[in-house]
Amino acid sequence: MEDGEHEERWTAVDEYVVRQLIGEDAELDAVSAATEAAGLLGGPISATQGRMLELLVRISGSRRVLEIGTLGGYSTIWLARGLPADGQVITLELDAHAAEVARSNIASVGLADRIEVRVGSALRSLQELVAEDRGPFDLIFIDADKQNNPGYLEWALKLSRAGTVIVADNVVRAGRILDPDATDSRLGEGGLDGLRRFYDLLGSEPRVTATVIQTVDAKGHDGFALALVL
Ligand code: DHB
Ligand code: MG
Image (cartoon, rainbow, N blue to C red):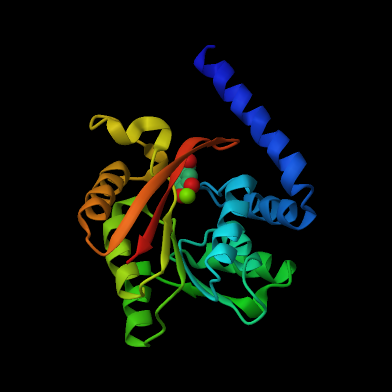
């Protein structure tokens, strides 16, 4: 098969999985539409990946979840769906407009009482969470500007305990991660380098054991890093 045919095939399989296992989701369709209408660019995860996040929250029995990078709140809502009634997501967003859109989306699906959106530089917000003694979190999802991924991982570890699950989005980028000359304009300046430094840190950090799950779906070929804090 040609590359394009593979892409068509895996997209068709993704649609099949959504039909078979996830089903119609009018709430999240409206969230996606509102996010697009607000002009927010960037990449929300696919529904199949969203369900994976929900499952990871449930499998780990997480009650306190931290998300770095909110955008319109699509992945935030999937994470919150995995929580028990007394669980909470704190999600960090740099852009005040995106945070407003996310708050509105979150309210529209009835999850405002379970999700706190904090606006500002995530590195600063993370420092504040440590100062406020808000950790440890049970699961941390990293999905913001990729050049800061190594710093996000370091702060995530400060906000972890043995057993914390750390997940990071976009660690494959259709294989561009392998090519030192590749650029990835959608990740911004230094994005691929940040991801490679993130791998270096993840691979050398004795406090975690980690792997990467490559994904092919409606969003193309990418992947999740999955780590457990020891
Ligand atoms: C893109 C996708 C993402 O998941 C992300 O976090 C940033 C950018 C993209 O493909 O544009
Ligand atoms: Mg992402």
